[in-house]
Each structure stands twice: as structure tokens, then as C-alpha cells.
Amino acid sequence: MNLHSSSPLHAERTLAPVHWYNAERVSQPGSAILTRWRNERLALRNQAIDASAMSMEELSRFISGGGLFGGPVVNEQSAMTVSAVYACVALIAGAIATLPFPVYERTRDGRQRSNHDYWWLFNEAPNDDMCAAVFWEYMLSAYLLYGDAFAELIRPTYSSTRIIAIRPHHPRRVTPFRDPLTQQLYYRVTPQHSGSSYVLDPSDMLHISGLGFDGLRSSSPILYAARQAITTAIAANDYSSSFFSNGARPDFALKVPGKFTPDQAEILRKSWLAMHGGASRSHTPAILSGGMEIEQLTMTHEDSQLLATRNFQIEEIARIFGVPPHLIGQTDKVTSWGSGVENMGRGFVKFTLQRHLIKFEQEINRKLWPSRERYFFEFNVAGLERGDLKSENEALRVALGRAGEPGWMTPNEVRRIKNMPPLAGADGLNNGMNSDVNNGANNAANNAANNGTNKEINKGVH
Image 1: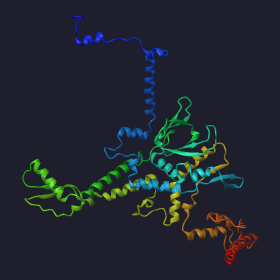
Image 2: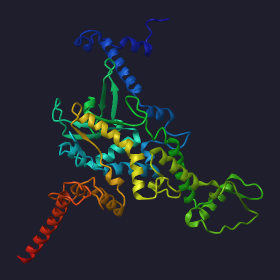
Image 3: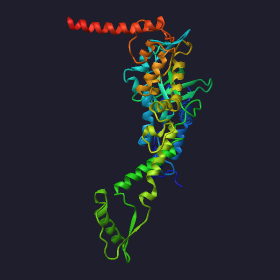
Image 4: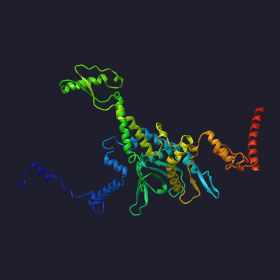
């Protein structure tokens, strides 16, 4: 072998310059190679931590590819295309968004309403970008679809205990994690539009968790309990769309005597679709000649019981969300929630809303007032439980006292329920007898009415 060969490979090896000077190595203390290797290992470890911090629904979606047995993809976005899911989420979120959320102050005799500054945040405007109703619908939608709802408590300074705004965050942009050494809980928030992620202390984050909470996250009702029902519902919707877009005709075969070549079969298929395909040509009479016959291959629409399947999926989805089917339009069966509006409203509050309301109340109270028990928030559900006007007036009449029966509410308390201003001297209870308290309340009401009439008369005279 000639060591002085002039082959191109040998020439490349001998002519390539070799530089032993490394600017990166000289500029940094220690070994540049070890530093680069350490940074790569840290990056891999951070990726491993992120992968291990995946929630169960994210891991399930990653493994299965989203669909169930090759069916349609089911996630929080596609689930909202199912009318039953949309109706359940809209009903619960909309009902809670309309509820008053007053602040109460504990007193020696019980409690009383308070004009606290935090009332404005939860009843009018939590921040400059949205009103309170939109905020509650956003939080409830995230809670019902993803299993968790997050909202950041904005303070004027880092050490301040006062809250000046509330900013909700999408559940996919908040990652709860624990410190490996202290096991302290923290929240990593990734901004939606721009900026780097930041970490929040639990005192600065409202975290309303759902069923299946493991200390960090909750189970998504869509990907766990309702996944198969939603998959079937989406598949039934897709099948119905294709069924009716094809003229609602069953699959069939054209049977002809003899043997067709592939080209002849394709020509026949295209000519048949051009003549009879689509809903507008579904009733065009077919003319068969040359011994051609039509042979049905599948069951008819009635035999397949597609409507029964879709109705069952509506009931299944409503059962998962705890909503009575008749409240989302499924009225073909008799409800066991009562026949009156009052009974239905009371049952909806008691069996559907109450389990959600208590979680929001407790989380908000413990984060806003962690050390003091003087103030607290509580939803007012009287509006949903209110019956028809006649029954309500009869109940208030009993509360005021009648026919010698003592009352348990004052006239001003009744007027407060009706959003009417109080009357002077109408704060006494009716004891069932013709007492001074009763006369005082009646006189106050009569005087107020007479004064209003006299003022109107005087205005007319002048």
C-alpha cells in the first residue's frame, strides 16, 4: 500500500487544516465539552419532567390517538359539537352565572349582607376585559369540560393581601406541580398570547377541582365518563348526515345477468349516481332493463333504530352531567322531578347545582379570607327555587301572618325580597293579635301610600 497515494480521500485528509484553539473553551472556566454535555442532560431531564407531569387525560389521548376504537376523535372541543353536551354545559354555566353572589358578614345574631369591595369583582366585573357573567360561564365551562377551573388573583403588590382583579386561565395553560423537596404546591402559568411562563403560589390561584382530584388535577368528564357516549353520538350524527345527504336510501346492489368488466361496472355506478344520487333526485323513478334487479344489502332506517340510539345517548350524557333530560329538550318521557316549575327548579338546584356551588364558595372563601372568618361569599339560589306568582304571594302572606296567626317575617323583609324600598315603622313582626306593632306597620304603609298620592296631586295643581 502506497502511503503517499494521491487519492481524493487521502488528499482531503492531509489538506484539511486542524485547529486546536477553541474560543469557547478559553472563554469559559472548566471544560466546555462537559458544560455542553451537562446542559444537554438538563434539557433532557426537563423534557422528562414535563412528560411525567402529563395529566391522565393527556396521556390517554396521546396513547389512543384521540379516537375510540378507530372512531371519531373525542376531546373537549369536539364534545361541544354534540347538542346534548352543549345544552348541559350551557344550562349549568348559564344558571350559575345568573345567581347573585353576595358578601355576608357574621354577626352576634347571625349574619347580614355587607357592602364589601369584593362584591364588585364577582358580580359585575372581575377585570377590565370581561363582565362577571362571562367570567362565571368561562369558569364553569372549563370546570365541566376539563375537570378543573383556574383563575389568578391579581394583587397591587407582591406582599399585599388585597385583590384588585381576577383573571381566568385556560386549564391547558396551567400546570400544577409540587416542589420535590418540600412538596409545596405551585402553579406554572403559560400566557396565551406572549410572554414567558411564570409560577404562582396557591394563595394567588383559585383552583376549583372536580371529581377524581389527585392532588394536582381532576379527571375530565368528557374523556372519562362521557367518552364512549360522545363517541357514539358523534358517529350517529355523522351517519345521519351521510344518510340524509344520500337521499335517506339504504345501501343496495344492482344485480345484472352476465358478467361485467370493471370498466362497465364503473360506468353503470356513475350513471346511476348521476341519475338518482342526492336528496333532490331521491324520488326519481328508476327504469330497469336487460334483466337488472335491485337487491337490498342493509337494514332499513326503521330497523336500524337510529333515532332510539340517539335518544339513548342524550339521556346518557345528561345523566353524566347530572341534568334532568327534560331541561335540555328531551321530553318524551315522564320526569320524576315533580310537575310544577317550583319543584323542578328546587330539584335542579338541589341535585345538580348545589354540588358545584359549594366547591366555588369554599375555594373563594378560603383564598380571599384565609385567616379571618368575618366575611364570606354565598350564592343566592332563591330566584331559581321561586315558584309561580300565586304560590309565592300565598307563601309571603303566610310569612307575614294572617287570620290571627303570628308571622315570622316583617313587611320590610318581604319588600326586600321583592326589591322594593323599606317603609318606616315596618320592621316589626305580626304576633297574630291587633297589637301596636301591627297597627304601626299598617299605619306606615297607609301613610306612605297617602303621601305618595298627595305628592302626585300637588304636582298636578302646580
